[in-house]
Amino acid sequence: MTPQLRELKRRLKTFGVSSCHVRRRNIISFSAQKWTDDDPLVPRDTMLFFHYPDESAAERWAARELDRTTGVHGAACRAPEERWVFVSDDGHVYVMGQGDDGAEKPVGAKLQINAVKSIGGFAYVVGAGRAVFRRTGPNRWLRLSDAAMARGEPDALGFDDIDGFSERDVYACGGRGHLWSFDGHAWRRRNVPTDRG
Image (cartoon, rainbow, N blue to C red; front, side, top):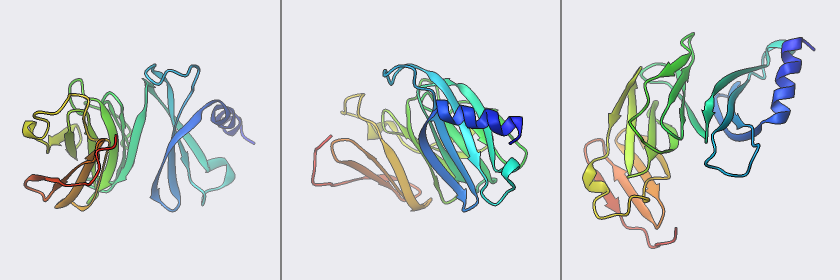
């Protein structure tokens, strides 16, 4: 076992995996954090681990250290170029792939991010205040949501997740049965028969 692989194995034992992302059947990533206390609002050491099952034993695992954060979300995207796109809870962006690895401008100022998904190949993020953004290029995020979507709702209500079938068929959801759909031009609130959080 190489010294690099020994160090990676040691780190894998001290970090707890928080999510898994699949780019292809043979390119998989895991986001992980070192939990030294139980408070989820405390920033902690964060790493990305990458697994390449078809490679030789020495090349099968890799890792990248990120800034300390409370959490990180990620997706494998194909547009506008093939990249991993990772976004921390506070909106900081880290991209990897095709030899272009590094930080980008944050998604938005003081924005709480709850999820990142690849829809139609593009990275989409959702968060507090019913915010929805799409990454259109390096350092460029297009806001798709509008202020009217959050009007009359408590600030705590936001979107917890997003998914879709294409850029013209996107769905964002939050607590208390809040579901919205986007047809590529406008958002529409959908009725869901629940108000559970």
